[in-house]
Length: 214
Image (cartoon, rainbow, N blue to C red; front, side):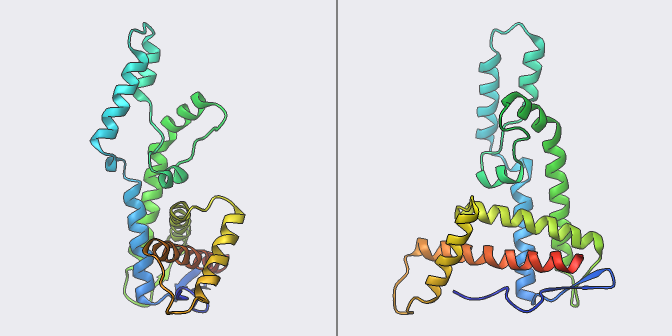
């Protein structure tokens, strides 16, 4: 596996700003990932089939019910995201009380989606400026938030749930790096290894950015 993302000090703090030392290809990769995650958070990205299913479920739950308040609650209900990666970005507010979780989601999800998408867009636009790229405090904060969301999505795609999973991923990458070049690697494993290497690069970049904004 390659070692992209391991250049010394990819982010450097300077006079209250952050200098981006990623090379142009790395910057474009990160900007593209930020853009893609913003797309995942677009509420309009849901398919018509999913929307119809939710509407039918709500109607079935309240059919024949005389409680107008219950019918209004069902009409305003917001279903949890069907994509597990998006669900990690928009978690339930209460895991023990489904009704409270639904109320929390109804009140907060739209605003959370929009604030995350705004941060992702701000960070992507900043990274796509001409060299040298220097971030102000707001842009650096947006990038820090956006990079965390990208890491959560990639973590979901490679199956990371615990610290033990992260340790196993690192070990798997080390073993893959020692594998002789003439040993064939199945396409599925190659794809997973690519995503795993991306996760490690994002982790390194995020740690460096945290240090730069302190």
